Length: 209
Image (cartoon, rainbow, N blue to C red):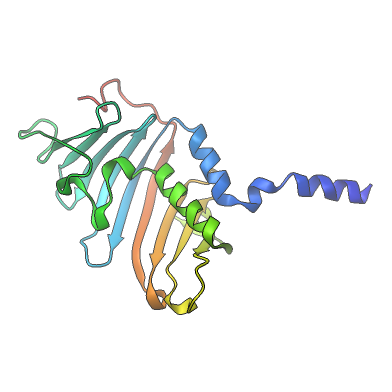
């Protein structure tokens, strides 16, 4: 009987052995989320913003820093980004393509490719080419997390390898911190997410003001 219970335990743990796969499954199951994002990239001013997402791809970004008051809304139906540089109730209002340099973030991040689903997909692609190692447990934004390091499998000098560290909430597997490192372990970019709310309802015209 002991061997049978062990077999059941092994069969019951495939998702926990691949935390990024589980995080993707959790993302596919949600309908919306909201979060406060702090993005720090080497050579760029820190960005602090409120980020709102609703499937099938509606995105609203309210800037706190820099450019306080700036609002961007991406419409997945028209594939356009509406921009209010001085707030929703103020002119001018712009209508731009998502690849327009005016609405691209640090290192060229596009508004329509900025959600957690895209982030997890990118991390899993890197995992498929390399390796995933546990960093243990910790705390981010006052929430228990499990950390993982993702390294490319390209070989060469380990000290020059670009790698990522991701910290997933233990309860929801939502990424709360992602760090990108470069040559010699230099931190190139970090994304911190706080005040996460999943499946939050939004007002009727929140994405179409």
